[in-house]
Image 1 (tube, one colour):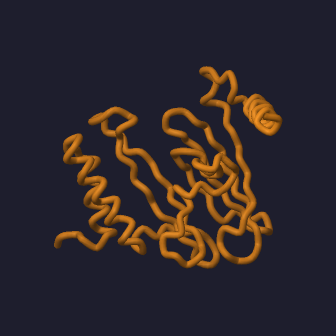
Image 2 (cartoon, helix red, strand yellow):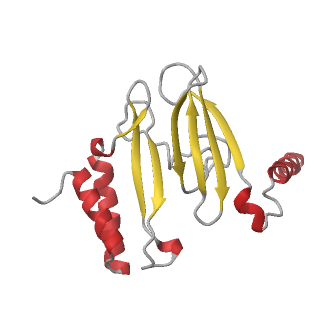
Length: 187
């Protein structure tokens, strides 16, 4: 009981201090900044990851990663859930939905997703596109073409989406891109 009360008080203080509690129309101007130190690229040194999270229905924000010398090695606008919060364990950590080790080399990739908008379906139902960033020894670089298995799975989801919700130009574009990266593009 004491631990639960302590955890509740900690979370209440955390959210009140960040301006999330009592959010109003000013929420678009306010942000929650999360920081996390970990060796994300396997170099034996911890990097600083910073996620400025603006919340809202799209979860807009920015992810920045600094190496151990303080040099910026990654910076992208992001959408979705908090990148530095584990959605199941409810602790500060790399969100495995955005930091999977897709090629099983011991170094996580970074998925940067964004929701497509075309007015065809409600905002909640809009499909997502994910770009994959891979560590090249110096920085995280765009590497969509190196992960055909990932895009084969995404392609299956896009085709199901089109079958269930109907086709639109956006979903046709996502299907074409996924086919290209999956190596299934028709000549």
